[in-house]
Structures are given as C-alpha cells and as structure tokens.
Image (cartoon, rainbow, N blue to C red; front, side):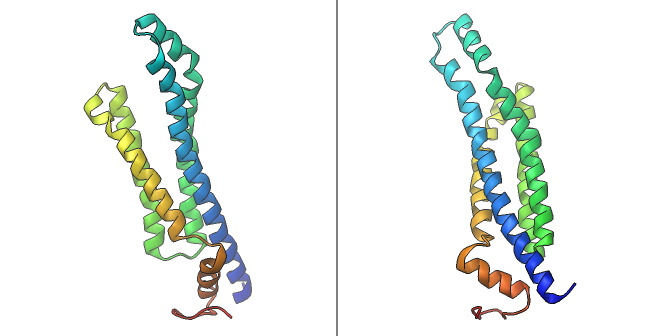
Length: 169
C-alpha cells in the first residue's frame, strides 16, 4: 500500500475512532438515564410496599435497557475502539489507555454482581465507577480528537509528512 493510501486509511481510522468515542460516551450517559428512569418512580411512590412494587413493574423496561446496554452494547463499542486504535496507528500508550476503558468496564460489571449478591456496601461503588468511566471517556475523546486543526497535525504526522513540532502546510 502506498504512503498516501496508508495516510488516508489512518486518517479515516482516527476520525472513526473519534466518532465511536463520542458514541461510547453517549451510551454511558444513557446508562444514567435508564437507571434514573427506573429509580424515580420507586422513589416517588407512596411509602408502602404495594406502591413501590407497582412503580418498579411499570419501569422494568428501563432495567432491561440498562442491562443490555451495560453488558452488550458498551463493551462491544469499547472493543471496536481498541481495534480502531490499532488501525489508527496510535502509539502503544494510546492503545493501552483505550484498553483501560475495558478494565473499568470489568470493574463495573463486578460491582453490579456485588449488588446482585446483596453486598450493598460494595455495590455502591458501581455509581462511583460509572462517574469515573464518564470522566475517562471524556478524556479519551478530547485526547484523541481527529477533527479540526489538531486532527490535521496528527494525521499529517502519522502519514510521515510532518515532524514533531511542525505544522502541516
């Protein structure tokens, strides 16, 4: 493959990485929406067992969406991001930092399992780790953004047309 074609593939991969990173961030934020949509009816229900049970029955859809998004959609998106990191020819450091998202997701899943095991004092960290996931995903988007002026510099550098410290022509 010629240098120009490699540069085009790398440029496309980096832009795809940026777009998928934003998608991942939206998926993570959707998790907050799903769990809030599940919890608020129960919190606002009358203080008796029947009212709370009725409220939770009516919002069971959101529990299912939270579970599917958290156990299937988000992890698949993270794996795609790691693959795009390789295709983008990012440094090993960047690829490793991208893979940290998967590590945080394993912790997130483990904390959810602690909740199902009725270990509330551990499961409470599920929300704390979720906030860490949002922060880390935001940082990843910002750090590797491939659009605008910064995208031109990194794309030109990856294609070998610009040395470090130079601006593209």
